[in-house]
Length: 236
Image (tube, rainbow, N blue to C red; front, side):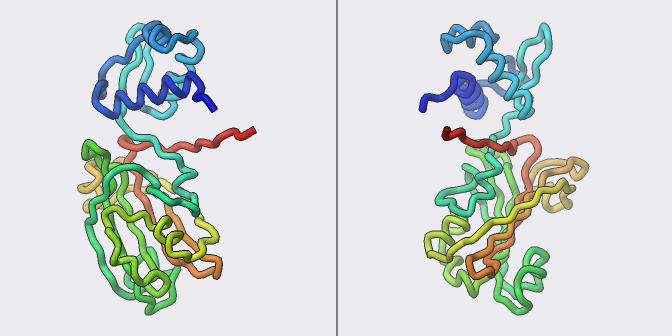
């Protein structure tokens, strides 16, 4: 199926912003210039621009044109919730900040999800863009009785759900909740923002067909460098 023109225009603009062609504060091409470039009418150009405004990536002011407000990446929220993943939830680079193995009751994430005494891996990673901007701080607690060999994987590039699927654990569901939180001083240092700025926290629990919980995770999303959206495909 051919990409709709407004989506093609939006994706081109986002790509140019991400590669640094247009930095924050830069003025984007005019509607007429985009109409000429993509050989379209004004309607798909305006639709693309309005979508970018809604994500916070650009602002539009009469007489000033369209200005880049954020270089944030987009991430489909439904992908973060998908229990059938075979690749990364968010594209970028991971840096392992901490790995601790101890009983489940020693970690806030796993304390109420795993039985007391369960050997648990607590992994903290920072997801960054290709340019090194922080996108998300990720923490996950993994039941080592259910996934005993997970620590032998490359933890910097590991996508946990894809790994569970590759070893046939039989994921039944991934439950997700969202909330707004303020970061502590240690986390804001990694995320390079102020403690006064709230972030979106995604809490995810991965449950197997046996109803055993194999992982509890949280993703702290950078408010400026990444935008969450819900995107569904019409297959009719």
